[in-house]
Image 1 (cartoon, rainbow, N blue to C red):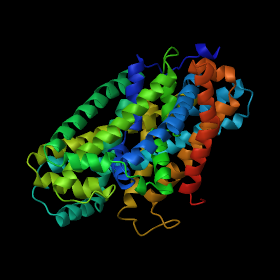
Image 2 (cartoon, one colour):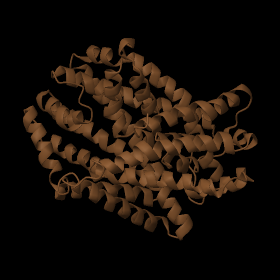
Image 3 (cartoon, rainbow, N blue to C red):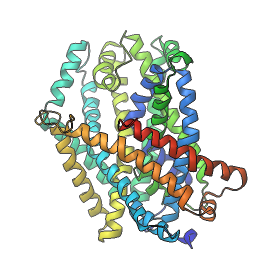
Image 4 (tube, rainbow, N blue to C red):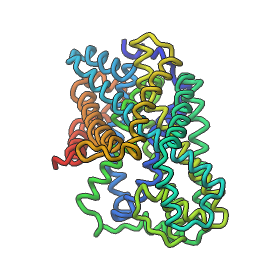
Length: 452
């Protein structure tokens, strides 16, 4: 019986462990800088309301579907989809859904590790006082010089990948669970400390207004699409990470309740990040509309000018490292489990080979930022092309197919048994997963690829 199927890789010791792990997977660098910036630019509170609606109608139903598939299959994403397709007497081609998620996570990890290496380098740069009293030109120039140095980037990329491999190689309870039990609470403590520091700047009310004051006049069709995309991507859906984490979840745990908690925690981190960043930005008369450039080109200026800036700047970049680390281990895990199941490797060897492969692709990405910056394909550098294919094509397609399989291919009895839902609550999930989520994710996919 499916309910008795067990994962050979182990199981979370508690529902809390799964929640921390899945939240860690969802919370990444994008939550810290992208959500606050996008919210402020698209109507503040109006955007937040639309975002929450998108999380409820698309993000949570798809997350429930992905966790459900993982827990029912109890294997790597590829083998899970193969097993469940056979169980539902459907096409064996569904295994390619698991393969696509695994490859997408692998590709994202390859360049994510490069950027995570930057955050590690900046922990030490800020702590050493490099940016104390620095001008905008000096900070921007320092970042340009840093990214132009392939040897330095390679060093940090290598260190971060080794950190990720070590955690994953130790297994579910000794590696993944121990890591998230330390990293996630620490991340929240650092965020709260940063918010407390931001309050002391005297510009906290300005940040509150920027993030939460509803301005429906700035809410356009593009804003709604941005909210939909943010809701989907911020929950780490479609890349196999949530599916493999779901395979370690106890059969007695409530998937719907767990998915809601994860979505709430993920959103809380994004909002807290905005309340931590924007008062500092406003206090220094800086512009908040700089997206990712804010992290490495704007905030170091602010930290270099403010009392206590060295300490809290160091804590901020440490926060980014922890957010990146918890995401990275979830991206490596699907390939590791597949190698253990299909190639007979032990976990240590599987983690080493998977990490080495992702590291190698990442080397090409970091070289495309400097030595090979003159080479492009379809008008994009290698790192831009890999990011586009993985995040704009493979993730939404994976999320779309997860919803289709869970709501259309799986029988009502199978999904009800796994979700522990009945009556109107189950019917609501089925409608959202069958109709609303696939249409919404299809719109994201078509828009991201320029078809719409």
